Amino acid sequence: MLLDLLLIAGGYVAGSMPWGLWIVRIFRGEDIRTKGSGNIGATNVWRTYGRRLGLTVGFLDVAKGFVPAFVATQLAGHGVGVLAGGAAMFGHFRPLFLGFRKGGKMMATAGGAFLGVAPIVGGLCACVWLAAFGMTRYASVASIVAALSLPLSSWLLGYPWPVIAFACVAAAGVVLLHRANIRRLLHGEEPRFARRTTTRPA
Image: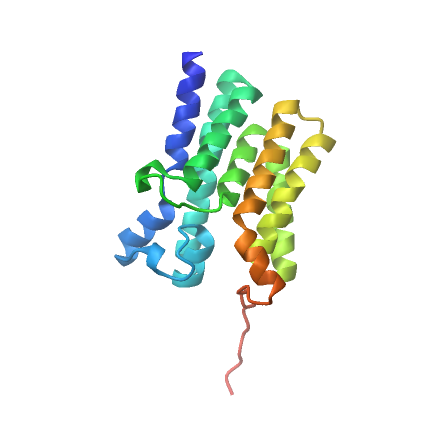
């Protein structure tokens, strides 16, 4: 029981690490919360500072969901694994290191948590995100579609009920945190990532 509590608490602490804020502060000396959308997630970092910092933050946000979920699953089973992964997601949403103020929208951390608890589901989620983003160039659409794929793939692949329940809660949480994006999409105001074009010299 004590080990379970420590694993869950560790998940929250790991999830609370605001890598978007820290990485931008280290390499650019600025506060990402004052830039772009004000979000500390990888999407805002990418839009504001470019692919290199954006990918770095994205990797770290995935890792902080993956590590506690994977360790807890290996040591204590799927039940504790999903609780540790859920704690990491909540930590990203309301980080300890930001005084429990607004954090990120959880998608990268959720994907990492599923890679730790249910690797096939997490891998499929990543593929769905990449496909949706490639087709629409909207990170928000990709996140919503990928999140909604979690319950279906967990059920179809026969994972135990704690994983399926976690998938449903994670999907609902991600969609809820993207409600402002949904409103902007409906009004045609959501920013889209531009496709890279190459120009030949004259």
